[in-house]
Length: 365
Image 1 (tube, rainbow, N blue to C red):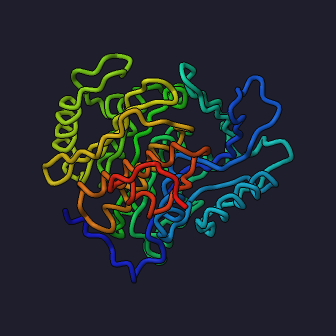
Image 2: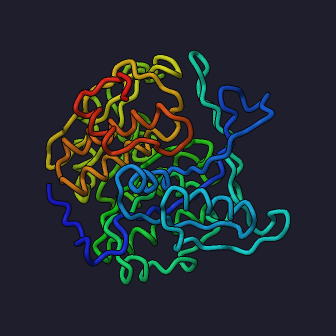
Image 3: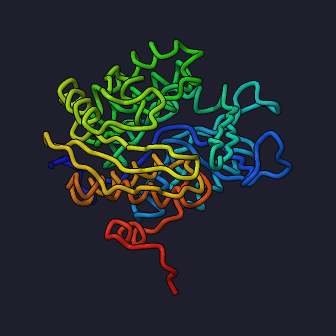
């Protein structure tokens, strides 16, 4: 496949993301409702992808976001700096002492275990990035003067507010103007869309965004909820996935949106919270490529697994333009990321490629 990527030498960044970065508070093996201690991390559906591209794959990345200019915002910046992601594109917003003007988002996440599923409880209304307008970011400067090869954003950011719907469209249009490849993860969250029009609004916004996307990414439910494509043969609880139904759906999506250069979806069958079957497929140039199956994958923390899939996929597409290889980078990276706590990857490129090559879990000394 030919992505027609901008030359590396004319761009300051390999990839940037647009979206919210939250403070994740994690009760470890316990539950949110009974916790007395929380471990702090950073995380966000869009940010996690460029963090993975930087930390695991060594690419130069930056995050386009906004923080309330207070101590929590500075803590978030410090986390991002530790991950190696450039913070120069962050917009710092003035706030009062109690968050009436704007605030920073918080996400409580428990991992789940066995028959008890993972649980997320976010506190993210009225955040700085939810209020951000296109005027808060000079997109012509970012994509035109600085230069960006790849922009990643997604449906979580689009669902934050009525304003964020407009800002994500402005960013994508500016990126396209300067030849930047755009990837978008549908990442449907019913609770986030409920206050601004529900699934009807989600489809209205995402169908418009889809017209400008080069690489569309989603999971089992996203393509149906966000774009209206039905997947034949899946049971309502998604305990068993029908691969032929996915292939038919992806081919239909590619016909509907001829601008798509690639369409990828993760395949997850949840046996228990800590044991999943995991794989992925990717459409490109009229063909569908399936990643290696990870049957009975043992999971420590599933949150961020899809984001790590996306970063592996993007790395593979950017460096090889081979969809079959790229989807395997994505599936292996996502699988490894789910064996460690937190939203963001702790894997190395060497480990990812070893897993792709069939390496086992024997001790390394």
